[in-house]
Length: 497
Image 1 (tube, rainbow, N blue to C red):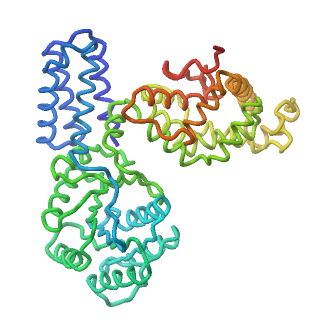
Image 2: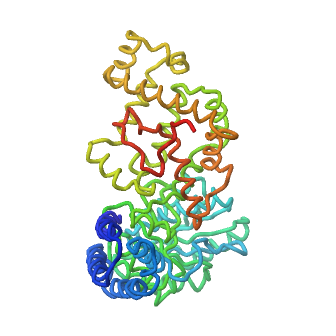
Image 3: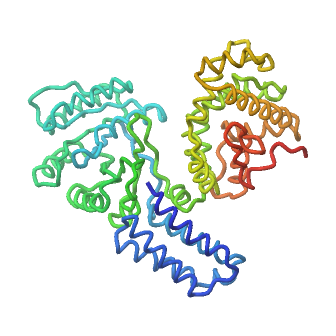
């Protein structure tokens, strides 16, 4: 979503950080470029103007002149200002769901993704916080809107209010409140009707529901692709109903993302969540500092570590670690690692979150490499017998031909996979022995939650997390993947101390 903005700003800061001392003129020229980049990304003019003014005031102060590398200082100031624009002075994104049953009202225009977002949030609360959730559809206008929520509820295992034809939204809201109280629910979510544009009838209906339900949270669901129109929608809803937060959907699209930057500054309401796709788990909490880091190409290691912790089971990791320490690393282990990378968003997804890897990700993309490489390698491993997977030494010429044919690929690709496996096995063996308690053990601990999350404000902890993530790759890059070398911060893993 923020790709073009990220590329433009990256170019500006590359030029800045290469210079030793910065003059006022340098900063002015750079900020002119930043303003153009913001406007092109569809950020509203007043917000862009205030942003540039704030950065200029800070950048022309004492802090820059005394700094070792003024260019980096400017990048830091822009980063901090981005965080401020995205987050304001609001608290964190957790939903207020105290004194059960807590009502959450979902509002927004038609087609913004309200019903899907309701189900996504319900699933998230049920799985992450162990809440008992009831969903109710108040949309009596759109055909099959109630049935849609019912089907989604069945998919994610969350209860929905039984449909009674002929009721108006206020009656449904009252019935939901009664059922939530009697059924011992922690939260009940009211999915209201939308319109194609804001009109009086819609507002009166939502107001009446709000007065009955008295919600703890009123979340406005806005389509991130509608640009500045999303901001005016938010202002209108807030003026009439009073919203407590915004959920931006379709943020995985190729829109320009300026709505997200303008939303907080114009409406004063925090962005709580962002929808990133159609799947029921494709929703993330909105962390301003992480998004700012991604925009400026600083990476987002914390999200990457969180993703790793979500997708890897601790017991499985423990078992793998013991095997690696003994120097055992067979094709089954390798398949597990390849699948792991796919789950975490593939190569592009992971590289986009690693500091300094944005350019490498671009080069990899230009070289025509994508996640199909992983898929082909997994197919080859699946084409092997159990015995061959456990003992890759068995793979001789005739077996290789059979395996490659079984996967519909060439022997050359299988040879690459075997070479890559051999290098990774050697590295695992070295890492298992290295250092006090084994370097591998330390890396695994941070990765798999045994050592907890790194402190986001501690650069040393973040650096350590980055290194641990890099530990999964051999020092010369991944042989089967074109051998793209790791960035300086992540290299040095296959070497003896």
